[in-house]
Each structure stands twice: as structure tokens, then as C-alpha cells.
Length: 90
Image 1 (cartoon, rainbow, N blue to C red):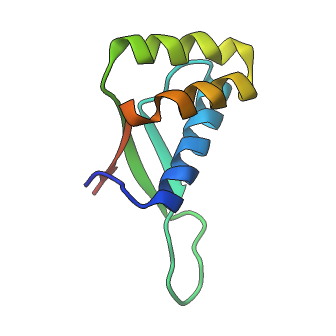
Image 2 (image 1 turned 45 degrees about the vertical axis):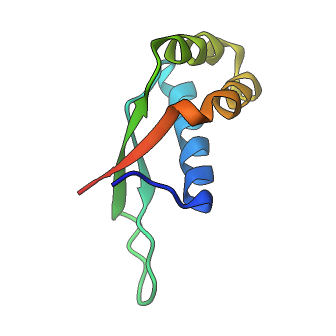
């Protein structure tokens, strides 16, 4: 299921940026803590998302911005976010 919630997407773009900076490469999978509506929060329970970039040129542009640091990569992700999708894995 493709993620469309604006708040969740904002978190996923941020998480994607952070993971790419740590790993120094474009990452194809990211994790977010699972939303809990009530009851105790288990921090070890996460939702897994596949990252889909629909254009190789966009992927190359993102890859080129990783060595430039967080602000540059965040700007590139913002610029190309229409080409980046997050598919929730069951």
C-alpha cells in the first residue's frame, strides 16, 4: 500500500534522508515506529517501507547529494519528492 498521509510522508522523507546519510548510499528500505492508538507503546515494533524512486536520474541526483551533507540531501529530496514513493510492507 502506497503511503499518502502527508504527516507520515514528512516523517518518511526525513527518515530516508537520515538513513542515506548514515549509510552513505541510497537506501531502498526504511523503518518507522508503528503508530499506537492506545495502550503501551512497544518501541521494538516498526513498520517497514520500501522506497521506490521512479527515475534513475533522480536516484543519481540524490546519490550525488549524500556527500554534501544533510541540508543538501534534504533539498534534493524536497525537489524530487514526486519521484520518491514509500510502499508499506506487510
